[in-house]
Image (cartoon, rainbow, N blue to C red):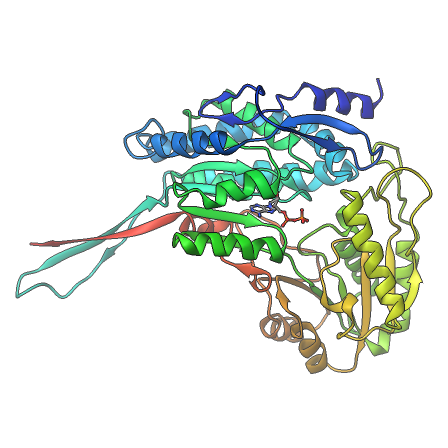
Length: 493
Ligand code: ADP
């Protein structure tokens, strides 16, 4: 069998039903939806959608698992052990996950092999380590009516966490939400993306095998407007952790506000990549190209605004065009392919719409812009120059391999352009001037800045943005804080 046939067989073998309360529901009576292969446009699997009863079952099982339930009774070291076991199981199956993610998302296998899977495994391991370290604090207080007091805090799980993930990197972003929540002692109900739910359903198998108690972790496949909507409105949910578009993020925030529930929202970006004249241009060209073309540009942190010092503008343009033209667009399972397909027909139409808008507004199309004449949702890597920061292609998130190059004349102008955006998620800077690196990193409004490298993905580093990019942080200690309440206890001695 070919690698593609192997992956397709794997996809067919996954239980395509909700995983709830420690078991798989029967598909009987549930509606189904097809998962479409973005390359062949054929159905990879037909998945049973979680309905209202399944959502209620999952949330109620999650609640029951907390407190005196089987999950709530486990101490930190035991939770850490289970998370460590899950990390080991995921590592052992990483090749299956990489092939499946490549198949359902349409990305070349090298990316999940090198980025998504190692990151997901590390994330589970990192948070396995936190599970037994959730100490409170002793806080000196001046006493009560002349008597001394002892005040301290206890960290408690927030409760039931609804995790809603996007289709671009479902395994890694799933891990970012699941691992800190489980480490903190929360129960997690995961709603994976309808376009790419298979890796999350495979993860349910691993959680089952790892031995998590029933209700600690559930997976509810389904569409956003049905299952997602039911989940965010369920009163038994204490927190919603969402990654996706600002439009849906707003719906999630409104649903959460009605019940005063906590949220962590990561809603994408229009991230600047700033190239100064003193940068190592070889490294900058390679890094900037990776920043916009990796994962077909379907990355929240994609560096879609390429701000270049006018002194090296023409040279960078030439290098970036040359680099773009080395990209091989095709079936991710073909040897040599370096860019796969967009997720679905809607996304392809959206990206084409933006390419037309760029041309219409007068930006200069340097390379790409077309779609290979074949089945699948493919678009060529595309670069525009001669653009201004107010054009649609510089303002709106495209979520495709489309970069907009804008020239600047001074560091102040570069910072002003970088910050003139509705989004504030990530940025990269390319410079050999140490002092400029620190100064500009401080001045750019973004949740994460990388200097002379690409996006700083690491489970130890907080991740998230502000403005239209959302609020709250995942990963690192903030990932634990986001999933815990700090209770104060004062004893009058
Ligand atoms: P896209 O439009 O690119 O698919 P979304 O932000 O709509 O991005 O999707 C991100 C995640 O949010 C997916 O898992 C999707 O199913 C889910 N989702 C979409 N709409 C809703 C909704 N109304 N309520 C809850 N979840 C939703």
